[in-house]
Image (cartoon, one colour):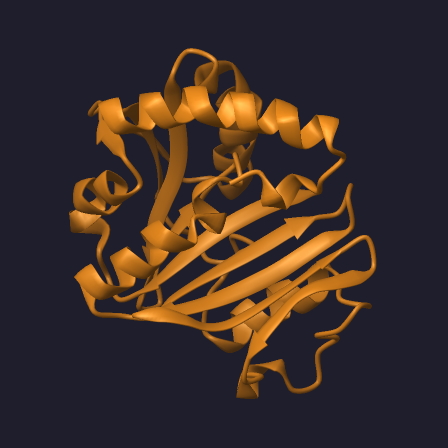
Length: 207
């Protein structure tokens, strides 16, 4: 299972264009809407790779219980600390990210507000990031080398963030083009990625 989410405290759905601009995307106004959680997720994960090769990014977005949540199937924006810190300043709010990657046994979360307040990440049973003071919501969870997907989902739930589609909502998929700055960075990223693979560095250090 692979899941990657950005949760922004507040209802900012009407500011989606501004949000994605910070990640260097341009909205193509080709939204798709889903009322079924599974169909929504299937569409994202069945299409994101092919569209990315055509320089189009797709992201899911919805609002629920006082949060605006973005589903990032590429697991790219969710680890872009610079953009997330900037976004928290622009919107003047808390932002939380959640990562679940069971294939590589990688799990983590980060809290942003002006800067990184808390960050925790485990890969293959090894804690690789553990900064900031533990959150009250971490109590009773395996926030250690034994962390698993259930701990991430329960942690999100303690904030009132539903990452499992329990509520019947309308979910939107945005088709996003890359802006010129992003296009240049992608060329550099591909070169860096190849060098990183050659050096046997972990995947989350690509950026």
